[in-house]
Image (cartoon, rainbow, N blue to C red; front, side):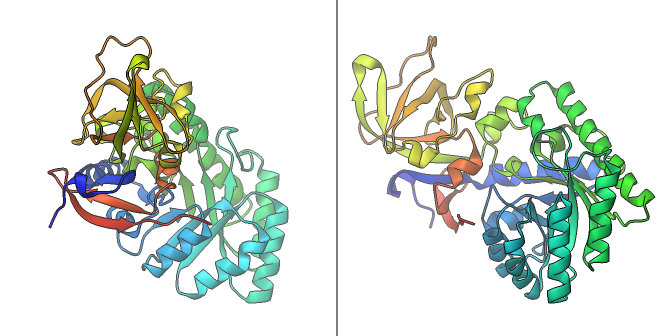
Length: 379
């Protein structure tokens, strides 16, 4: 039987299942119109139950950001995965163990040194590990420059000569997170697409295989208009949403499916503060919205039905205490929230807030707890 929120110990993580399903279907439908496969990134959710909602089938495809995630989802029956962080040679035996269990786990890399380490591993283990070469879409992080055909080809040839499977290229348009205008985001998606196609063409011109051309970030996935030459798109935070993505424009505040339930434990009325039992240990220290047009503090405060109070945020946080106050300059009135009252807090960054918790309390359409879904943390 569904249980009311006041039966829960706070702070704890809530998940609105209806919003989750709507977010997953919206992204799936958008990319279907562009003719590409969606490979959900499960690093945000870290939950098999959520993965099964987001993936095309219980077997995948999916991408993960830790080998613990790869092991967890493989145990849950996912058979098509990419480990989406540049490979460290010491992790190759763990990759091999996951693959030996029947999961097609691909890895990524962006250097000749890594390629040579993979080739040595393949020769020693006889496991033709599939590899995607990471390409730099926008100077945000890792990857080979898309027009650096010499480096791309050298890496590709080292992999093929060593017996690995060169599966293709992958890019992440991380710089899109700094944008807000829909036209700028569409342009970033096109920049990502062109970089991917350019890199793939360089490999193919050298006679190397490149069956997979993979791009992805939630903002570029959301605003892409043309994905010619792309075979798959990866995205993850769109499933749950958060305030940072709302600031970018990738989701609406009312789409955010995850929140932290907290309880009022005190007041500092002269300061206009309400004290709650969710500090940065429950919310994380992520303050990404401070760089956006609307600073949401440590999170936006809602009532227990998930409806935001006007201009009410977690303005500051200690380890276990959240300080709820009106946004500076607001003309709103502080709501009357007595000791013991509950609130829900929408997070700045779903990945970081989720990492503070080991389970989701899943809400039904009436705002009651209908299920508990475990989630994992660690590497």
